Length: 333
Image 1 (cartoon, rainbow, N blue to C red):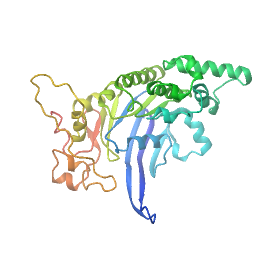
Image 2: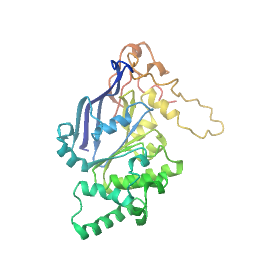
Image 3: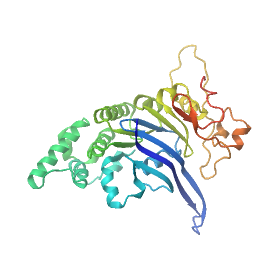
Image 4: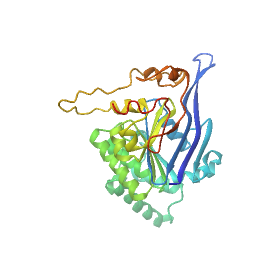
């Protein structure tokens, strides 16, 4: 499939300053030379521990955070070269759903005007005056119905809804401009387990109906397995493994991926005494990453080569890539 989104060498650093003299003491490289493609209609999941750079990468893709280096091409157009007015027009075609639905909505604005706002910004209402108001009200009702909310919700304020209902409203608002790409930045992490499944199923249904591409940022591999066509695993701002969902989860090539899978709670059947290799310790400080492979201090198969030489991302498995000197050794755990 041809790529709708092409990311090349994307890098983002955050400086560390002294609290008193404001001298620069160092930098945290949150995203470190990421290459990523997303095809039209494809669902790609970004997974990894907190601090791996998932959200920063997603925010840079929609130009809410500016990269220090790299390219972001959407439909072949370099988004980093667009003037503010051109970027505003382009934003109609890519949108984002944030982790906190309450913080994403204006608490003083009723839901109807909040959903109407993107239509006004992008000039998507065909009429003005009384006819335009009627069209807007009809469009808002249709948007609410699409995410399973009643039309009367348009007259209520954000605080009158549950977390799951607010996230449905945020999804409706993000889809108002009919985008081709939707970045979902951990949209279910703050929700109850049953509500998570409802939101993920809603996103999957809307993605199939509209044929949009979905970049899904998540921690929960069980949810990722249900929704993603392809998985990209990040560690300290770098891609360590990428491939089709069935291959990555069924036979992981990188020890870190195997550890993430092992950390997913499972019901242990009678007689099943297998022990899986969960990553030991905490991730190292991104301000002072280890030499060689950044995962080697926690890796159960690390060797001297891992401590001295950083592995490059190379083809491995079924249409996948992996950054490991000894790929696949833990796949049978």
